[in-house]
Length: 528
Image (cartoon, rainbow, N blue to C red; front, side):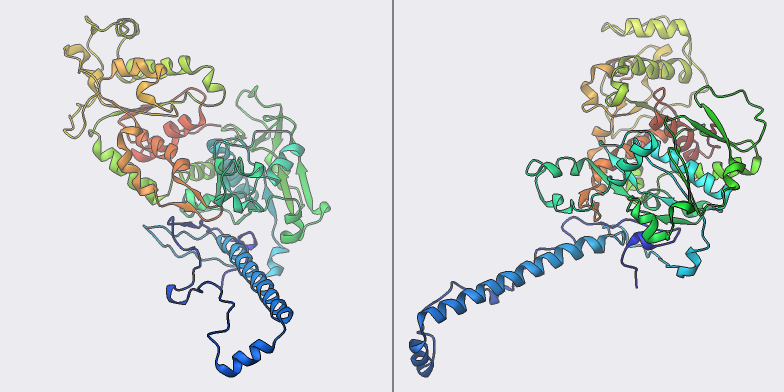
């Protein structure tokens, strides 16, 4: 029998309740043949003796009985409705997966209470977008293995309403309020009907074990998947007092860098202010080490080969492990030619909006110059001449290592193919992953559209995304498809023969450093 709350579980396996829309929970209705008809206050349906007795009853008594019956019925109806509502969401806290494609069995074990008294824990505070959370999660897993501590894992937060970084105390409060307890009714309400529901649909929470395959890590640490991020959880679930906890507070996002050797042979990283020895953390006898932010690909400076191997295995495990996503990606990639290029153009969020034009040009430049092999002068000439309707002429031959492109009869090119022999490489199909709302008409991508006649976006493969339509997170009743589409975009681009991303984007770095090497049988790129 499963424990009542998922946060009670000490386990390395967990998965969310993702169910078919219009699935398990339906409105309770009475059978059609048993529905009550209109109330009949007459006595003609009673037997004769009963009618006589009925006539002798004082009207006030009958009215009192009627009112009492209505009050009792109302109370029972409210109680039943409230019970169904409460149990509907408490059941979802078990976070099983129920989809139209799979029903995996999740083994959940509850250790003896005395075993918890021997556990030593490590915790951290998540923040920012998904890939920033992922990097922090990688670092936390790595530290937990090195320190031999049980990692307390918060859920991943997906959506357009991230928690930004704050100094430790403020961030701790923000994270504590990040759940949706008390707001589950918003799943059935309009976001404009209540002020408290305005942000409800903008984000959702999912356990990491549903997103990635932690079981693939041979030395994965023990873990508690925590959903209640309030301070009282530490006391109520772990039984820890203030003296049992060592807190390393940070006031800046890059205050601490954790190193595994006393003398670092590498030059200092100017981004970080303070070097903190991992051996110093290992000497802490506190039951819980509570850290602030762990975001940053170079947050852990690891020199010892064993520690580097631990981090490498953990980073490799961050490849998405969602069958519905893989089905959509497979359908899209099979529709593209066997050889195509990939790119990620991040244009529409955060500070990337201000430098969108510069970043788009840099991605385009890398494709033409670095990947296709045009010289600097020729790349500049292409950029200049493709601003007019006539194709550029007189370029030198391109990189001969480019595999031949095979046309796919199922796909049509948007533009007219380049006819000049020395421009044939520009006819190579290009898939662009982007956060632009309407990429085919996005001015920042116009140079891509003029250069690559066979350019494609995720919008061109809408039918392949139908496998995501039935996924609903039973934690909060949110449809998951909008939150998973960016992952599909990155996965398709990472299946390309070569792919390039946007400078300083953790989304792009993950695509280039982890996804692309994993899909092509190469070693992932190490940083830090």
